[in-house]
Image 1 (cartoon, rainbow, N blue to C red):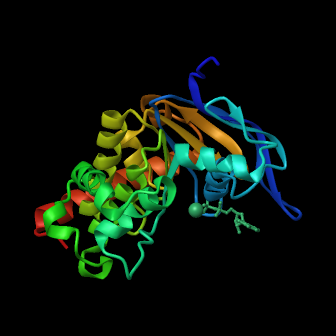
Image 2: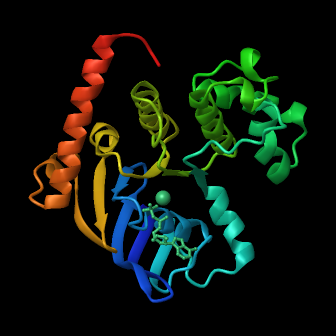
Length: 265
Ligand SMILES: Nc1ncnc2c1ncn2[C@@H]1O[C@H](COP(=O)(O)OP(=O)(O)O)[C@@H](O)[C@H]1O
Ligand SMILES: [Mg+2]
């Protein structure tokens, strides 16, 4: 079998809910190893787009491919393989409250690979290391005993545990303070490069996109209204893109002034 050079392909994707067409002919491809940002205001269909990749939602027309495999007519069982390739990181950490940090990260390894907690331990340690958290300090704690920013890192470590080749981030920095936002953003960049994953980030945060994206795609009303490398998108004449850019610049000014104002929240 030939190896596809595209990890993700959307070809004329249409997704409707009843009378409403949410995605109206979306076509783009993501190369292996690329960090791609999908920008759009809330309600544009960014999460819907991600869900068509993991089979939580099916396209009404058009095609969605992961590493060359067409998902259009895939049987439910065959999705398990796709879901293993695509690690999803949600906006909220969604850790199991009653499990320790170690048990949370080991969960997928135990469930999918049948490992014991003991056997999963080296990988848990490694994944905590990847997100710059200390195993000895945290393994035995419950999620409620660590900060929200740390919980986000743990949830990222949990996704990494099963070694996905594609990372899907749904609003990874929404609702975070500026300092944590920066940390998570840098972590996405660092991990994508180090692990050579393909990363697709859906977000309304242009600031984050400008910092780490290889390429940006802007969605509005079901269609792609702009796309290109960061330097190209920065010069976009499209009004909505200019609004996003202006907001990113304003946010930057705010962060800089609050940084100089003092300590971490
Ligand atoms: N399962 C569903 N059934 C009906 N409508 C949905 C469903 N999922 C999402 N929608 C609608 O699709 C639109 C896009 O949703 P979503 O992808 O969550 O937006 P966002 O860009 O904020 O992630 C919204 O109007 C939402 O109400
Ligand atoms: Mg969403």
